[in-house]
Length: 161
Image 1: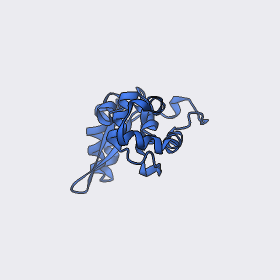
Image 2 (image 1 turned 120 degrees about the horizontal axis):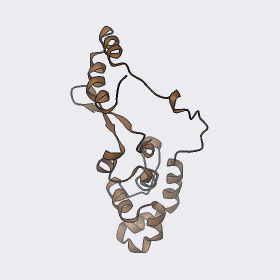
Image 3 (image 1 turned 135 degrees about the horizontal axis):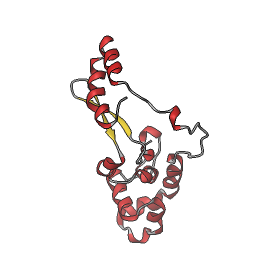
Image 4 (image 1 turned 90 degrees about the vertical axis):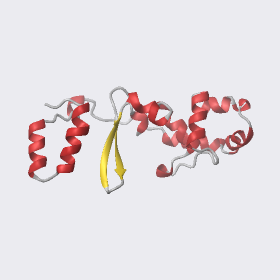
């Protein structure tokens, strides 16, 4: 879903910390390149190169996350990497040549389908939070960790009603 991050969409990630407590981080388009080293639209290219175990995508054997980011920063896309294969040497070139089909197939599988029919009225998806009511309900049911996350993570980034 990282490829969906843009000026209007962000990712809320669960961050597990020592001591068995959970925190959340909000990753916006502004932090994306600093965190991942590539742009959101390069995520399918990245998965074509480095693979993705959670999606069972093999990628290119021998190309890991750092090398994938490096190649994408140099060439921009999977297609551009293969168009410029002559500029690449050593084992990296060998790995890319050996797994050409896998790289392109994995990229194709990683691309989210933009043609899914859905209700596009944004008002049907807005979450309007009433801060006082939310705090009251969370306190009433003893959801103190959720309340803390709500106050310290969500409220600073978004307006409440």
